[in-house]
Image 1 (tube, rainbow, N blue to C red):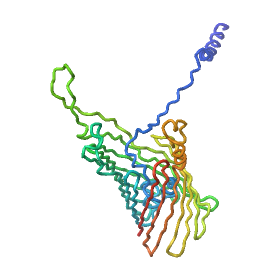
Image 2 (tube, helix red, strand yellow; image 1 turned 180 degrees about the vertical axis):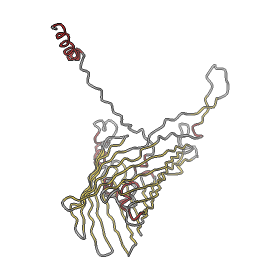
Image 3 (cartoon, helix red, strand yellow; image 1 turned 90 degrees about the vertical axis):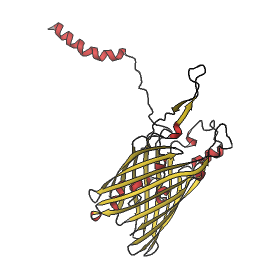
Image 4 (cartoon, rainbow, N blue to C red; image 1 turned 30 degrees about the horizontal axis):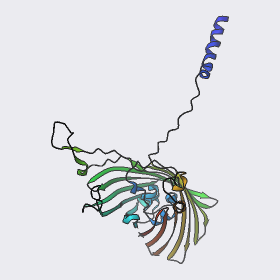
Length: 371
């Protein structure tokens, strides 16, 4: 009995003693962020001036046709048919357009919409290491996305939405295509008698993009001393790149909800797969100027972890102090809008200025129609 008891005690103690004999090796931290490793970046460009002025924190508040970009769950909150169009002139003569049309179904329980966006530029000269002044040829870039969005209200407080999108990228004579999906939720209720809304969104989740095209074809010179005397046909291989997937959580609260005016504070956190996480803070003031006219003022600041001033080695990379100061303002957006109503017809005009840090600022204009 004593030997058996000693054996049991030994078996109980040994497992506790063994780990003490193994060196304590701390786990290795692994960063899976794909810095600069995603395709179709144009999918992240804002769809409209109002959302851009709110720094992307618009996902919890949106309830119009542009919900197809910001949060598909917001499309179920439509009260009438709507259409919108946005044109933006970006840096280096590039442009971005977004357009969409949506309508409520089944008495407002459902929302359905179609959207299209395009980014690109054209007729840029081709330079090579043998032709510094150009070969006389030109090339163009065109990136297009076509999406269909469906949204459903489960109750008077909760809605969900889904967007399926076909994406095509064309660079010179190469193309890449794929499919992405957005999923979003919207929860709306009241706190202290004033509306509050929360959102959970995953955007641009989908298939990888791999360029293909005749430009990848080439000729390989024969190896010196080899058997062949003529170049052999070959083809460059390309690597596939994932779309710029983002996980976003936001909230919007009306700190003032009077009959003719409203002040809404918004915030949002996002985690992209190709950059550091960020967050945005925004505010919107809206006021009725009469029975048919209303106006709004908006502003936001979006902190982005990959800004130049957050890098201690930015000076070594050539960023001077003036550029560092400009970079600190990257993420600042200011704008406003006017809305005019005549019977069942609504017209909205919105403008936003976006500070892009060391790059030139961007002016955005949007037009929205409701009927």
